[in-house]
Length: 343
Image 1: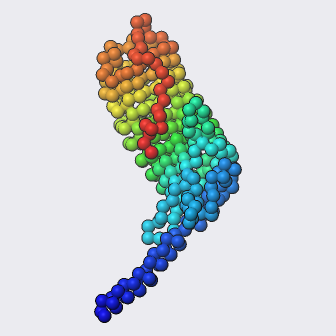
Image 2 (image 1 turned 30 degrees about the vertical axis):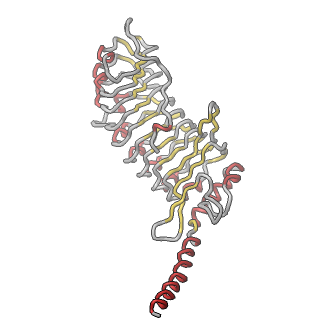
């Protein structure tokens, strides 16, 4: 009899508890703020997104999956979800950068850029400025807006995103100077600003970024000297790749550049630099690619470069080096694939 009563008691508890657990799952809805923001984004981005984003709940509801490119997480200790990732790849989006994006304050990844399919490149065409409210996204770690048509100045408010590790704004129409506020990003590892219309000097304050591995500001309208860029003692301690090509930089290659001991790629092509190449540069331990072409360098290349154990390529065409100075390797356009940038 006692066993039978215990069984009935257990069954009663299961009868009560299981529906409660199920109700918690059913009631785990997306935060209304995020639903509203994504619907505003959906309304502004055109039919391709409307076609892909189906259902009332962007995080999925019942039999419907989450909207394409939308990732959500349940807030600990609560019964609601928030949007943590938004990735819109290559769907020919046309229109202004949606201000409603800045209401998704729990985002850790925001990506809207092109992907390559064979020889065809299908890219988004977000236009206008990045709104200053981008500084509200305090949890953002990856901001990737390559291959759009964004313009105006890069907002200094990006410097408020203290958790940012990857900032990709290349292949747009940004103008103005590189904001020195980007030096306020202690976790930043990758900074790509190439193929824009940026002017002025590269802020030497970027050298204080202790985690920065990759800096690409090539193909802009930047001026100044490398000496100015590395004037802060102990600057760029983790930098591996430095792309300064296709700008209007002047002056020489300072011997202090050899203090960047982690440097692997140094790309100085197509500037207005001059002087001799310091022999100390050949003592950077893992220097692999050195592009000096199409400047106004002169003199000779120290023999130590030709004995460097890692140097695969040194391109020197279009300078005034002494006769007999030879390149190293077969020159090619050096581009890093997305797979080399850890997301």
